[in-house]
Image (cartoon, rainbow, N blue to C red):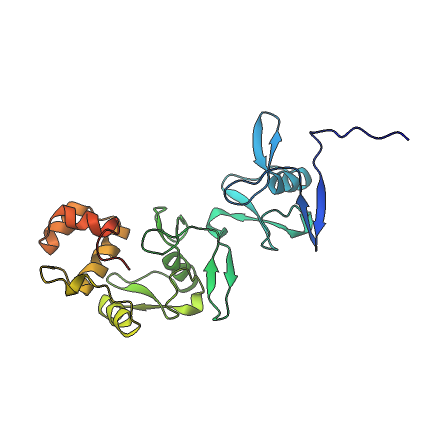
Length: 229
C-alpha cells in the first residue's frame, strides 16, 4: 500500500462544531492561529478572508462572529474596525465580561477608540458608554451598576459624580482601607478623583500640587502600592 508523504507546510483543519480550526499551527498570546505567508506571519483567519475578498483596508480587522479565535470558517468571519474589536462573555448576571482586553492595575480593561475618543488609552467602559449614549459631561464618571469592573454591557453603565461613586464603594464593601491610616492626608473621594485624573492624562506633579501631597504619593497610587481597589 502506498502512503502519501505528509507535507509539513500543509495546513491541517478540523471541524469543532460549526467552527473550522487549524490543528498543526501555534496560536499567539491573543489566541489567534498564526501562519507563515511568504516572508511574513499573519493570522490565518485574516488570510482566509483576504483570499476570498481581497486585501483589507487600513485599520480594518477580521473578527470571528462565533467568538472562537481559532476559527477560520469563512461564514463566521466579519470585517470591522479596531474600534469594534471588543469581545466578551456573558455571565449569569448579564454582565458582558471583556475577553479581548486585559485589565489594568485598577481592574478595568483599557483600549483606544479614535471614533469617540482622542485615540489615547482609556477605560473600555467609558468608550462603550460614549459609543452608545454620547459624550461624557466634564466632572462626571461612568459607574458600573453591576459592580463588575470587567463589564462592558451598556445597560450596566450609568453616569454619576465622584461622590456617588464613593458611596457605591462604601455601600458595596469596596471601600479602600488607606483612609483609616492615621497619617493619611487623602480621603476616599480624593483617591477616586486622582485615579480618574491619571486615566485622563494629567501629570503626576500637577495632581500632587492640587492635593498638596508628594509626587511619590501619586505615583504609589498609580502603581497600586497604596489605596488598592
